[in-house]
Length: 297
Ligand code: SF4
Ligand code: SF4
Image (tube, rainbow, N blue to C red):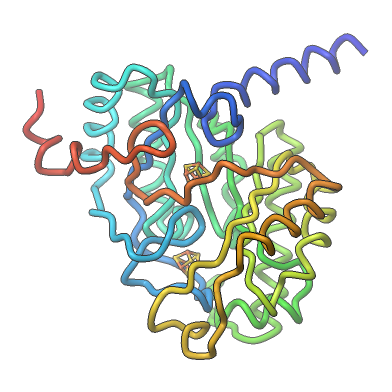
């Protein structure tokens, strides 16, 4: 009983310092994303690769990709300027785990040079199971996985293909592999005590009636929060060509309400860019471009 309470308390404290995981914290603590991961290993039908990954971003934004050492330098400069900085995340512009060397070299550099900053990772989850040990070893204690479906028939309408262990898969098989990897990764992470938030993109007519099931499935595997993000159809994508529309605010509210029967629902996500800097709701990325940061002492 005592250890359970201590564990819960520790978890509460970790949540309380993360601006995305705690609504209260987002007024006081800042986060930054460093864009070090350009490649992706899947194709979502709402994604146009000219923009940042929708896992954590809205389309229409293109981040400047940094090398790991540039990203670490940027973190140190920003942390010196923005004292509320508590979290450094990698969320793109592609999938961080499709670029493992760059992603982990950056995390390692930040952990060595700024050990007080918490590390956070957002991923589509395809390669998650193979990196759980590395994530735990680096003490990355917040992970976000984007899971848009747990049923492969629905998943096959959302993903065109995946590239997995040297092979390209499409259709139902692609969705089956991706979903199984995502759920396995989620389970492994939560068993290690790592906090996992699940993002789901709400796609009207495709997964809107299915997200309750997603919420229940991820709760069962230990996710602590569900972030239902409205689809923002990017131009020149499978969905834009097929007339898939963005959801209305009423639709989002209804689905969030239903999902909240299973687990805590995030309502303050701003769908930040992959190089976002500052408190949620403010974007100071323009103050910290590569050119400017490299000139700073
Ligand atoms: Fe695009 Fe992100 Fe999906 Fe990859 S995971 S296809 S970058 S939205
Ligand atoms: Fe937080 Fe959402 Fe922004 Fe990610 S995209 S940093 S979850 S507010």
